[in-house]
Amino acid sequence: MKHTLSCLAYNKPGVLAKVARSFAEENINIYSLTAGEVEEEDKSRMTIVVDADQDTIKGAEKRLSEIEEIIKLYDFQEGDFIAMELLLIKIKIKPENIPQILQIAELFNAQVIAVSDVSMVLTLASEENRINGMVKMLGPLGIIEMCRSGKLAVSAADEGGERIE
Image (cartoon, rainbow, N blue to C red; front, side):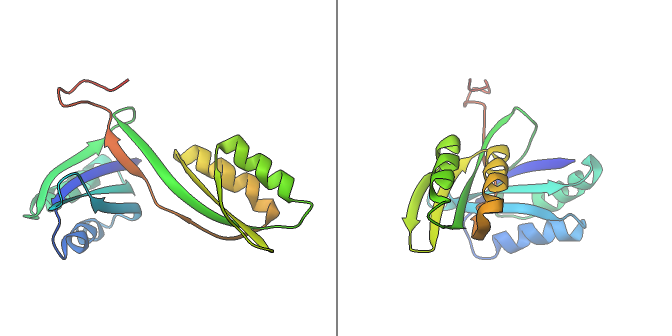
């Protein structure tokens, strides 16, 4: 079962490696891991997506709790969080395909951010299923290169513990 974990940690060298090692020691594959500074410069948030059963996740959480730089760890449940990814995708262009590419971009609310004689680069910030859908539709037109950020997630609850609607 896929789990989306959010880890707030002090922003110090080696913390990311310690977190990754905790999952490796439990034989858990990390599907995506994003990390970056938060509202306080000395802290970072990591969003980690893994596929493991609950007992295996508990083992990893125990290892993570032993890392002194970790402040908080959340195992989000479906509906408890808001998540998005960022996609950059470079497509081959031929004059006859440009209207179709632009139509797909409009369908998904993607933006064209670069165009050359032979390619077009689109960007989309959205949830995983929409990104998968756009990639699937653009695939037959010739994907030259693409990269995805991995999932970014925040709690759907406000400070009082209530869900944000």
